[in-house]
Image (cartoon, rainbow, N blue to C red; front, side, top):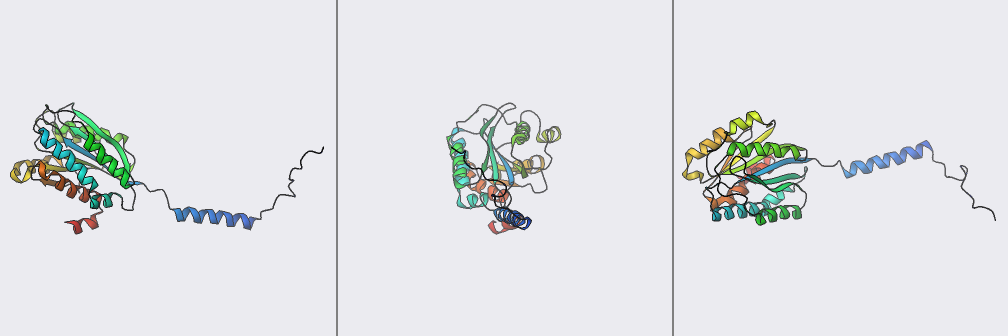
Length: 245
C-alpha cells in the first residue's frame, strides 16, 4: 500500500508578491477599522469620611448618596462616553492609620460595571467610627493607591469630609512627601453652606491642581446631589461641563 501523497511545492498554490501585498493591505485596513485599544482616560479615587463626627445615619446617607450618584443616568452616560474608559476606586478614611479599601480599582466599561461598583458601595460595612480626622494621612493613602491604578491619562482624588484636619500631618505635608505629580485633588465639603470657614479650609489647604474645585453639600441628606454634580464635572470633558451647570 502506497503512503498518502503529500502536497509538493508544485501542488501548493503560489502567491505572488502582489497577492501578498493585497493581503497585508486588507489586514491593515481591518485593524484600522477596528481602531486602537482605548486607553483609560481617568483614574478617579473616591475617599469617604468615616471619622467620629459622622454618625450611623450620616454614614448611610453618604454611601447611598455615592451609589445613587454612580447610577444616575447622566453620570453613567459620562462614564461610558467614547474616548476611553474610566477607572474608579473607593476607600474610607478617618484617623492616621484608619483607611480601608471599599472597592479596589475597577475599569468601568459597561452599565453592569458601574452598577457593580454602586452595589459594592451599598454593601460595604463601615470600617471605623471612633477615630479623628486625619486628612493628610487620607491623601497619602490615595497617593499610594495610585501605584496600583491602571495607566490613565488623568488621575484625580475626590475627597469628601465634614471637618478640618485634627490628627496627624496636614495635607500640604502629604503633598510634599508623596507622589502627587499630575494628580488633581477635588473636595466635597459636607455642611459647607453653614460653615464658610470650613469651605475656605478645603479651598486653600486641601484641593490641588489647576483644574481643582470644591463642591458643597448642605448636610449628608444632600450628599447624593452634590456627588452627582461633582462626578459630572470630574468625568465630562471641559467643553461639556458648562452645559450641565
